[in-house]
Length: 275
Ligand SMILES: [Zn+2]
Image (cartoon, rainbow, N blue to C red; front, side):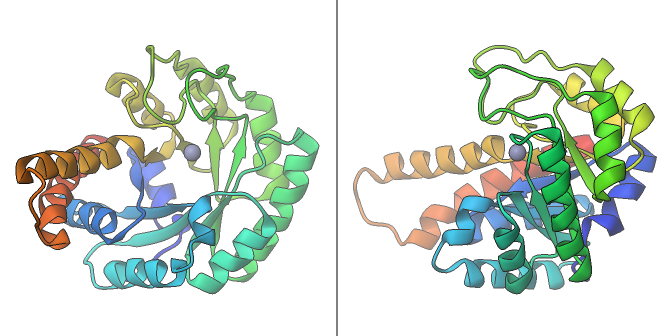
């Protein structure tokens, strides 16, 4: 199937009360794991790359590989830049063949965030890409304060910028939690009343599943997962290395079980969010 933008997959998911998973990949193994999972579940997929990797020397080869995987799979696949930090990164993502970008101005003032995101929307749309913005701020981990987005600000932001999808802070954080997060379904519902474009849940990993489901039902049609499935990949590599007891094994044979393990983990999440 062809590569798609978020516009081809998220509005329908929101209407159905479902979510499309966005997995952060960083090498061929993590990309293969999630493609295999989404194909097995017959669900659309967002393959996303964290903005730090834009500076990786072989990012062009990594994105070419992701495009090839998407083009030759039977499901719609978007290649998305996660937490884009500047307009220059958006331009670079366009040149590299991404189909979608995020511009994260969530640490700026509302006015500055609207201003820079509006410029990002113009650049992305002119090149045929979709774009996600963020209002409120989802923290890097749960040791930072948990802010919630203001529903009225979210409505204003969506209207003023013209983004295709909107990341909203509802109490989740990136990474594993040290204590149960205070996820607010009420905030999600309040934003949902005012914002009609698909919304995005960041920090999906390790968040109680019943909360994730309730948030998705409010119109959060994209759920980002990085930590959880990458950890499954890492733990399986560790298990294999321990088993090898310092002996040699070709790298592909070390990665093969890790890809299978991460893929099974991803498939389970895709299934849950596609119900
Ligand atoms: Zn995020």
